[in-house]
Amino acid sequence: MKNITLDTSKAAQFLKAGAVEAYEPQVKAAQEALENGTCPGNDFLGWLHLPSSISADFIKQLQDCANVLRENCEVVVVAGIGGSYLGARAVIEALSNSFAWLVNDKKNPTILFAGNNIGEDYLSELTAYLKDKKFGVINISKSGTTTETALAFRLLKKQCEDQRGKDEAKDVIVAVTDAKKGAARTCADKEGYKSFIIPDNVGGRFSVLTPVGLLPIAVAGFDVKQLVAGAVDMEKACGKDVAFDENPAAIYAATRQALYTQAGKKIEIVCNFQPKLHYFAEWWKQLYGESEGKDQKGIFPAACDFTTDLHSMGQWIQQGERSIFETVISVETPNEKLLFPHDDENLDGLNFLEGKRVDEVNKMAELGTRLAHVDGGVPNILVNVPELNAYYLGQLIYFFEKACGISGLLEEVNPFNQPGVEAYKKNMFALLNKPGYEAESKAIQERLANEK
Ligand code: PA5
Image 1: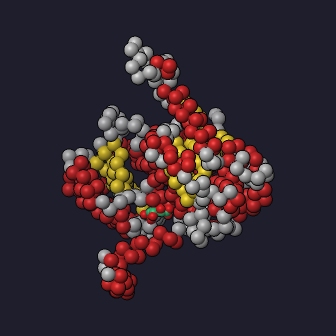
Image 2: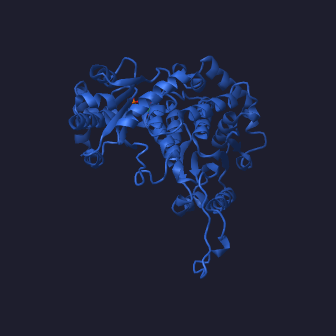
Image 3: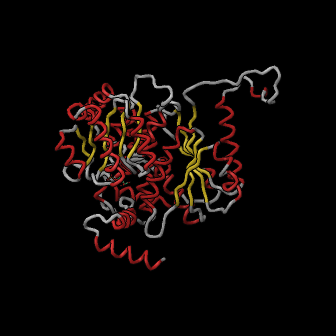
């Protein structure tokens, strides 16, 4: 089996010779700190050897639970936000038919997502869609108290019970949450739901290889064993004893930090030429944004879907402020084969492409874009993925996680906390007069009155 590979040659040309290699001692120190648990955030290192710790028995338990949902539900709604949402969606969308909701083959339940926004229209429309459906719910929340998820779950639980009866609903509602704490745990225990535990030492954005991601992915009908196998192989390929220049996580982390600190590249755009990878980039954005954006530091993580966004963002990327670099996730071989047909009249002038695969054109667009952007002053990192399947997604997930841990430590922040995400919650609860927020409510009302 091949591995994903990294090509940083088109980034190195923007750096002084040896700039990436100079990071070797710091990367080694970061790797050791991760292994020895001596880095900041060391109570959240459960992801580091998570892949190789997943047993066949555990996967069977997950698969058994997934089978119950698959057999008893036309639709499964996955409720969760942030790290309790994006990993599952990233993998499911990457592996699904692009038109899955239109061509439901009845072999797999339709997977929908909720609890990741507070849009009244979204939730009303979801409720209306589910009205005549046999649906189940996976309620995912580590804290068990996240407002967006809890709100959606309250609506979904009631609707599921109303439509299926409390007894039947109990069998198709599953909780993925903390072992002891939080409202989601209390509710699961009281109602007798099947539940899975999110380990204390795995933070949300690093949790896709726990039941947070694995359960919804298995319910969607994808091969979680292969996903984990890919992650296990990448855990080895990015291990602390692998030589610096052979360790893709080390090279990626060092290259992006060199671009940030020495070449003034403050924004990283992850790009794909496969629309199915859109949510993978969303997952990546959270992983790097929450891990590195703190202490007034951090590369801003952005994402583009190409060639789509070449017709919108392409201008900025080619000629805007030169503060960006690109990381292209390139899929070597598509899963399908489609050839351009002959047209006698050739009115569109495209007969020069006759008999070529669509992917050949896409690949030339990809290479042409990389060369143009490099010519325009945008360093380029290439992550080559042999195929878009569960095994290589597992590799990609672990590669980006390991590189993120190293990169955050190179940046000298705690990559495993996210204190900044609390600020909006405090204001929202104060504005909603949540019990316990009386002082904050008074302060925010005074502030708003003064700002009038
Ligand atoms: O990475 C994180 O920690 C966050 O994105 C959380 O996953 C997100 O806020 C959801 O939290 P919870 O799982 O507690 O509902």
